[in-house]
Length: 342
Ligand code: EPU
Image (cartoon, rainbow, N blue to C red; front, side, top):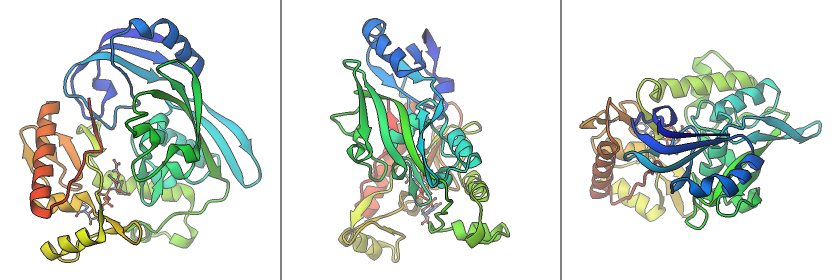
């Protein structure tokens, strides 16, 4: 465990916001966090904010409270048989390291999430997803510590209420109340690739591979290639991945959009609802590749807002507000940030 004061948050946010935190406390285990909640944290400045890699945050200025970081990166086998395995992963493990480790050991299911930034703890909160797979599909349970009274609590899969980019940990009643300290992932020992998300099969064919016989490592490399080709590297240009969520709307609303622009893209959710790519809505409003002061809209994926160099949180928010305003004015659809403003 260590406690630091007046710490730069530059290494702790992928948007590249040059802000400071009053206090940063790093813990290595659930037991250590429990102890901290009883001893040290009561005298630390509030609010408490547990972060991972800071890949889904926008700091609007210096943070006067206490940042909590988890340094537990352990991967322990909980149970296994010939077909399946359950592993418990420390919240502080980089998700992509875990996916790489899993593939190396012949544990499958997470290949399509390769190269998504962030830590394992955040994967369980945000239900990260890409190319037709969501983290929640493979999460068996989530181990937490209450930041209010230091009790431990395990959330079974069904209690986590996973849906698109959502979990119980984002609900108003739960947000900020629990620290996720480790996550149990249930993976398969038999590789069953998910190739149905648009573009994946074509990328496999373009690489000279055969979709039906692709290996897990090859699929991971294909996914990494797609992401690197389309998404800005936060180490080069600050960003937080998708800035907005794709709006889920009724079919009637979708038909109305098609009267404005015929054949708008969509993914079917159920009989009544569809998901429309926010990237498309933003591009239609003319924002792709544009900027407002030092905040920009990425030229290959307009869902991603970027720090063009020295942008403040206020500049990024001003750009976000303009885009949301224009999408609503043009299409009558609300798009909401996925990124959390701090
Ligand atoms: N599109 C455009 N213009 C563009 C780019 C995309 O119109 O310049 C439209 C196209 O219709 C395209 C559609 O948007 O078919 C979907 O684009 P893409 O496949 O890139 O996916 P997305 O819906 O924009 C979501 C996730 C991404 C994830 C991809 C792939 C959200 C908020 N984002 O983006 O997640 O990588 O699907 O599965 O759901 C992230 O979370 O940081 C992230 C990048």
